Amino acid sequence: MIYTFLNPRNVDAYIAYLKRALREEPEKMTADSLDESGIRSRLNDPFYQHTKSILALENDSVAGRIEYHFYGCMQDGYRMAYVDWVYVLKDFRHRGVARQLFREMEKDCAENGIFQYYLIRATDENADRFYRNFHNAELSCVPLLRKYL
Image (cartoon, rainbow, N blue to C red; front, side):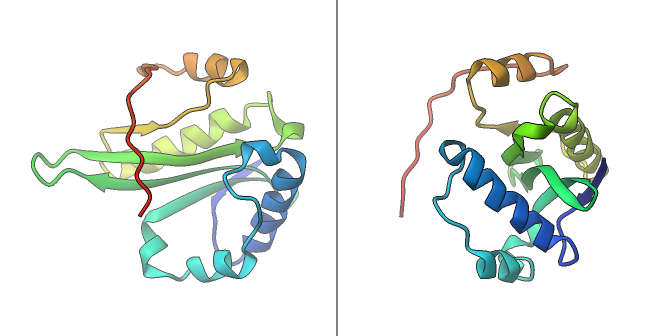
């Protein structure tokens, strides 16, 4: 398995992975359809340059990904990351792919002086078992406000 950042050279494999994920587990996806041209254009859109995706590649096919972005607090200089998305195709689960995706992201966080990261996690049995194995992490249920503009 090779772990690398999403880029124009591997975007076709990324799109194929998303199509497969939508086909196999549509209930776990946040979108109902795939905007291929939008994905390609976002690779060069300055707004998305702070969003990073690490892909797990096996034989030039994407098995999983982690997507995240960095941000900070102006008041105290605290540097954080938010994990937008983690997903591994069913055929590749329980093989350490998600764990390695997190390791690769944590390496990038360390290189960029990030103090902590967080995510809104799934709470099914498999996800709970996975996240309970994280060291120096705590699981919580946090009140959340979401307002659409």
